[in-house]
Image (cartoon, rainbow, N blue to C red; front, side):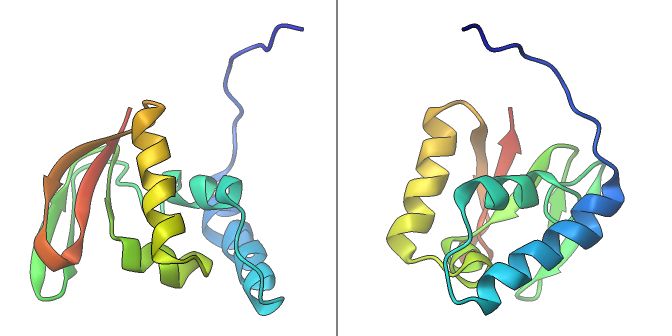
Length: 116
């Protein structure tokens, strides 16, 4: 069976309001957030810049362009209840599969990636 490729429209409201509620409910159940939900969270407007954007992290101004996001293993551990090993593996799989590309290191604040 051939899979069709395409796009699905999802309102920003879902990314900003509904998805965080689902993630919080999973965390309250004291289980790890599935990688599929984490991926959807990362590509949404809570994490990925949809245009030129600056954010201050650990006292440093980090500038992001459209399609870029700032990630750290610590962020993934806290946000999704993962271990450092699982967070690192998740990011490395996204890179290996051509979903993410490293742009630059930002010290302890994390690494800037670009969605490909």
